Amino acid sequence: MDILYINQLIVMSSVGIYDWEKNQLQKLIFDLELTCHDKFFVSNTDMSNYLDYTKISNIILDTINGKHFLLIEYIAEEIIKILMEKFSVISWIRLKVDKPNAVCNARSVGICIERENKILSL
Ligand SMILES: Nc1nc2c(c(=O)[nH]1)N=C([C@H](O)[C@@H](O)CO)CN2
Image (cartoon, rainbow, N blue to C red):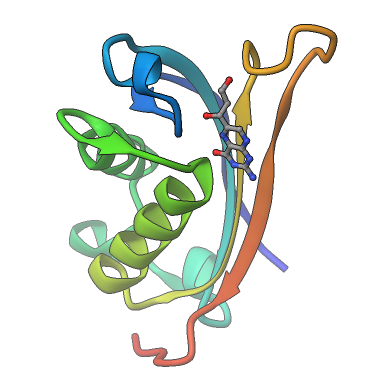
């Protein structure tokens, strides 16, 4: 299985369920892994049609910037939805979202979700 990954992407985000969280940005850290339709990575010689980790990183940033999300779960679902809409070759995504400063006695808290793309195409 071929995997494209992005590790420890840090995004200052407006996120949280409490009122005070609407007035300040907090650090979130993203770890993303994704796979594609069979052999997409190795057989894809078309430079107009490769999966660009820079573009994917920017999509994560653009999804979050300028909006407030109540739960990190909502951020993760939104990012995965957008990535699967934009890149129909993606077959599976695992996205981990860390909120490192949320619980003072924990190094980090967060979620990790995995989704499969039901509508695949090349
Ligand atoms: N499952 C979740 N639990 C909690 C979240 C969350 O996003 N997902 N958020 C909070 C608060 O916003 C907290 O991070 C404030 O420090 C609490 N629980």
